[in-house]
Image (cartoon, rainbow, N blue to C red; front, side):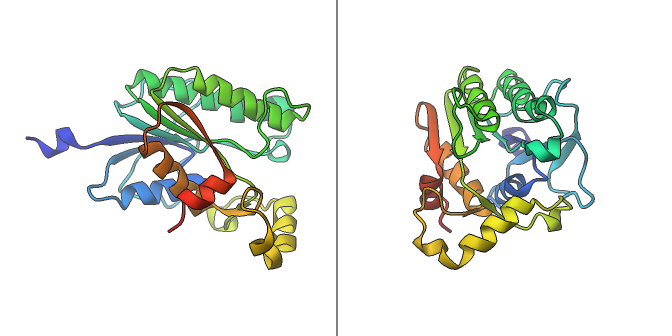
Length: 223
């Protein structure tokens, strides 16, 4: 049998962010490692040569390579986006476009990063968009969907060339000394833990849509 023909393929959107970077490294560290197609708006300065990098416009995605598994770690903040419209374009439109393109490429298992507090009926714009995204992803038609809802993310954004998030930094500084006393459901969580938790949950292949809250991500993502 041709080993190249039988090699598993995985699609990854957002592989240059905190969680996406961890997902990429974990996928490439598997034995045997899958062919990872990493879709990005801008290629990273130090692109891992083991992945196949595809620079794309998420509003006009091309036909994607065939795969059975996909991960979506796209996302920004209202402040970084600059407007509600720009935020929605990044956190809803781009995510759903990727999900639909992945499904068309044969993907049956799909995992996506959402947020603690996501609720399509929320009065808070950020939480409402995240909730609407979750519902839309669930309706695409995958056999298995994992929706990760991490709490405050801990990770080195500067190493990725990302701007600092002052609110995030302050919250991590304040909670750091007492992190062990904070319930797992709301405790700050490492990006690596989120990534590992997503992978474990997706490969358990529970039917339909599975929402994995931050506390469960902490458990699933233990090293």
